[in-house]
Each structure stands twice: as C-alpha cells, then as structure tokens.
Image 1 (tube, helix red, strand yellow):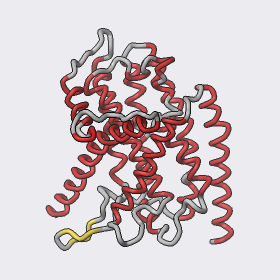
Image 2 (cartoon, helix red, strand yellow; image 1 turned 180 degrees about the vertical axis):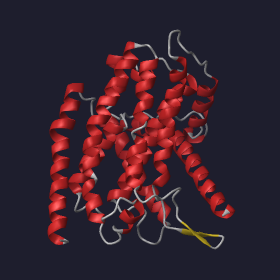
Image 3 (tube, one colour; image 1 turned 30 degrees about the horizontal axis):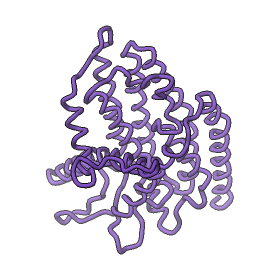
Image 4 (cartoon, one colour; image 1 turned 90 degrees about the horizontal axis):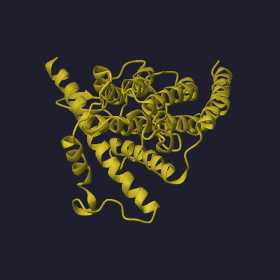
Length: 329
C-alpha cells in the first residue's frame, strides 16, 4: 500500500515538474521560432544559444515588484491566477503518456490517475481555468480587465460546445470515455483518419480554448491594453501565462491521445518519446499559426464558432453515430 502511494506521488511530482519546465522552454522555443519566421535570431544572449533565457525571465518575475491596485477585491485578485494554474495542472493528471512500465516488480501505468470517465474529467477540470480569467478581470476593477474576462468566458463557452461534440465520434468508435481504452482502440488505425472532420474541429476549438492567436481576443492589446491581466505584475502575471502554456500542452496531449494513437509508434523509440514527438508537432503548429495569421474581429470569432464549427461538429457526431449503428448494430 505504501509503495503504491509512493509511486503515485512520484508520478504526480514528475508530471508537475515536467510541465513547469516545459512551460519555461516552450516560451523560449516560441520566441526562437517567431524570430526565425520574422528573419531575426530571437533570444541568444543568456547562456549558450539563449538556453538560460527562461531562467532569467523567471528570476526577473520573481523579484519584480508586486503591485496590488487600490480598490481591487484583494482575495479574489490573489486567488484568480492560482485557480487558472491549478486547473491547467489538474487536467494533465489522467492523460496516459506512455506504455506501462515495471517498477519494483509492479506494472505501473504512465499516468497519474486513470478514472473510467477520464475524458469527462479533462473537460470538467479544464473549464475551471476560465473562472480564474473572469475573476481576475472582474476583481481588478479595471474596465479593460473586465472586458477581457467577459470575452474569454463567452469565447470558451462557444467553442467548448463544438469541442465536446467533436470528440463524440471518438467515444463512439472506441466505445469508452476512458483515455487508456481509447489509446488501445487505435492499435491498428488512428482515429484521425475516420474522424478527420472531428480532428479539424477539435484543433480549431483548442486554439480558441487556450486564447491563442488568431483567437487571442481576451488580451487584444490594441483594444484592451492587455485584457484580463492588465493590473497583474510579477509572479501573479506569470501564473496566467503559465496556465496558458500548460493548457497548450494539455490540449496537444489530448489531441494526440484521441486522434493520433497516443503513445503508439514504431518500437525503435520508447513509447513516451513517441508521445512527446506528437505533442511537439501540435505545439509547433500553435506557434506557426501565431506567426502567420492576423487576429480575428470579435464578432467574426463568435459567428465562426456558433454558425460553422458547432453545426459541423454536430453533423459529424450524428454521422458517426449512424455509421456505428449500421456497422455494429
């Protein structure tokens, strides 16, 4: 019993430390890639090839003066960034990132927890992040922060509906909402091929869910200064961005699990490396889109979610249900 608890705690610590480190170096990789897209070198002064830039940024934010404006709701103002970060970290807990391994004679799944309805858990926990954004904007007593929070809540509600419908085809094909069983169902064929429409809808919604360009309207600087985090400084400011980047990793990992076979791959590399390679490809596309596409106008963003993505996702779910009923009555 004690060994099992120790292994579970160890897995949780490994995942948390990995996500924190991945956040720091994902910011560096993004700045490097954006520099290359824009014909400039990107960060290259701190450490060899700029590899210590995330450490320098972290130290700067840690020692930066923490300013709490007069008139804010102090408790909510302080809790909001923590709530966003907590939701981002918790969502990754049920994602299997490798084949089970043997530790001290025990078969240990490379997954912090594996509830039977793990996919529903991911959607439930990931949706908590918007509360941090809304509460942060509202508690700031700043009209730009409040508008950014309201935009984020409306955007996430709109695109979360289409995202939920986009994965119904995967649930029907796998016959389960357990992520381990969904990965096992893709041993012969990845779901991205029969569910290409659902995959496209999911990935577009994932970009909107993480407030990334071209859907980064909650922090549109030409309209809202900086949006929901206008009044935040230091580590509280960093927590919001940490949550955003960890959410990028989580939605990429979920896309890998649902549509690209999870950790399955040729045997010459460990399963967790195949998983990381697939996730890295999604993260590269996130950066590529930011460097390529202009920000949408807000009314067009909402119209696209409600008038195009939602009907397409609904039709895909209905078509998949009919196909499953006919093939496996």
